Figure 1 (cartoon, one colour):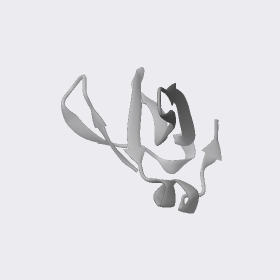
Figure 2 (tube, rainbow, N blue to C red; figure 1 turned 135 degrees about the vertical axis):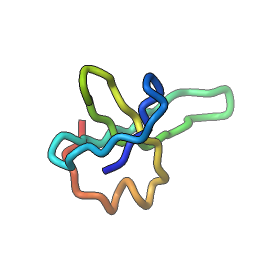
Figure 3 (cartoon, rainbow, N blue to C red; figure 1 turned 180 degrees about the horizontal axis):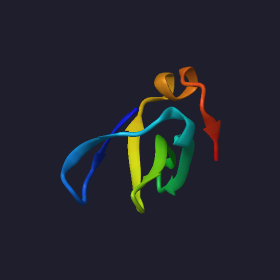
Figure 4 (cartoon, helix red, strand yellow; figure 1 turned 120 degrees about the vertical axis):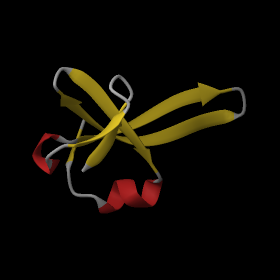
Length: 64
């Protein structure tokens, strides 16, 4: 899976075995906001890739 590393400003290929998915829920004044993301650690840097709900559910990786 390809992530964008903000620290080095480059794209990084990470093996699917080290990728996990996360659902972030936060409360707003109008209700709840849910964000779906894939996370990984590459060379000591945490990487996040935000995706929509359909891609999140379709991808078969472990959930945190």
